[in-house]
Image (cartoon, rainbow, N blue to C red; front, side, top):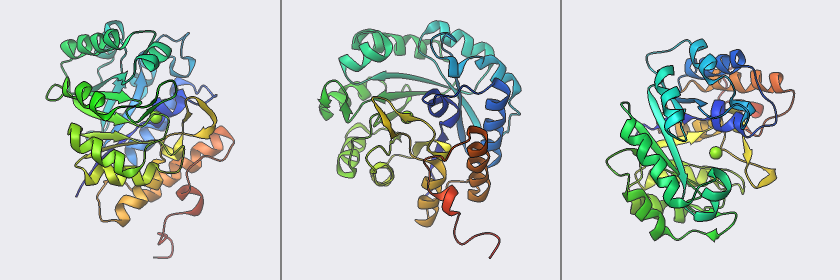
Amino acid sequence: MRVTLCEVGPRDGLQNEPESLAPGVRAELIDRLAAAGLARVEAVSFVRDDRVPQMAGAEEVVAAIERRADTEYSGLVLNERGFERFRAAGLERVNATFAATESFNRANGNASLEEALARVDAILALADVPATVTISVCFGCPFEGPVDPGRVAELAARFTGRAEVVLADTIGVATPSRVRALVERTGAEGFHGHNTRNTGYANCLAALDAGARVLDASVGGLGGCPYAPRATGNVATEDLVYLLEGEGIETGVDLDALVGVSAWLEGLLGRTLEGYVYRAGSWPSSSSS
Ligand code: MG
């Protein structure tokens, strides 16, 4: 089995960290990740610089990337204005997103659920490249609690056939049987897991069991948990690669190279990251083999 890992560190990861890295540094991070063999990298978000300073200078980042033929570079777009910037920048996949609950859309996107769906529809209507629709808070919402799987299934069905659908456990509350059931029910192509309550990696395996073939992950586990300030967020890409490769699932990633990216990031940010494998080292180690 082979899976497509979507590296979200440069976008979802950095957007949820306190530091703002310069565009040139973010481009270097993307280049290092692509060189480690990541099949897809979510590079930037086309949002207002004053609203999300961590994502400022998206065009500069894209212009500075050294594109590799075997990596697909994607960008997050929230509305038609963002899509025009995306198109001008020339990335290969557009990611649009909305939340499964009314309250989360209002808190996070200043829109009702219907308005958020209309924005995604408008982006898909403009898209002339492959598109991904990420549905956030599919398993639990910080405002509304547990989310009805039937509601998520209805929302996912609106986009089936028009875009790759990714189910996100945005606040990290899901457990494997729930992930398996919802991926099966929706036929979603992908899963975005958070390790907030230490179930993220088990949930990724459950998503694959249920037929998903795209997994989001963030180098070093970059990116905190929205609405849980002291908690961890995204699953760490190198930890997921170690797990998947050990289980005989191909990722195309050079684990030692990826561990090197996390070590570089640790030095850059001046603190220990969330991931385990970059600290423990890969095994068996390449130096002793
Ligand atoms: Mg995330």
